[in-house]
Image (cartoon, rainbow, N blue to C red; front, side, top):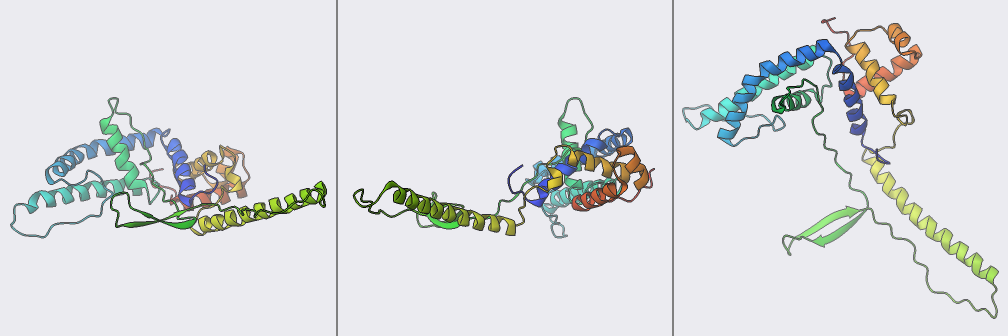
Length: 277
């Protein structure tokens, strides 16, 4: 972890451990394997149409359909989008049948299927798709010329620290002793330290304003998020009551409720007991 982190980092780590517990559930893995088998013909068709149309083999891009009409050039495009829609509908159905993170489920399921299809052993696992985190613009603005075109100026923000630079001064050993010199050095060092810290505090303020924060104290322990993810799994998937959950984990009931609800809300995982149980 970094010194300051975007909120998505904790969601990502929490989801990683939540998937860890789901991947140990035989019933979930059986359902996931059935989904993958159902997706196989759709995925094959989708990839073939993607190659034919030159469109992406991903679900990340916005959806869209070419206009209706007799133009035969539109037919592969419409087939591409229709196939993609069918895949997304099946993924969405699975994501509502199981308590999965609302904002990540479709991408993670599709990424997991692609990993399954590409693997020799056909190992069924729910994986996290790669996550991208934007870095906030922190620091002073610098203007430089583009490396591509000389007539283009590039503005960037860099967290440069400009320490206070002492000016030359006179120290006359005839009239001034070492105590005076040491005292003056202390003043210079204090001013230097103050100038650096003030700039550092400003950059921290800019990063915090962009949503970056230090790790919550509860997350400093390595296993905290793993345990919290287990709370969510036992509640959302296994349907344990708060009392059963506290008894099974050996934690206070109030602690279990507070941590589980806060983390599940942060990750977008519904806690309602599933009708499958």
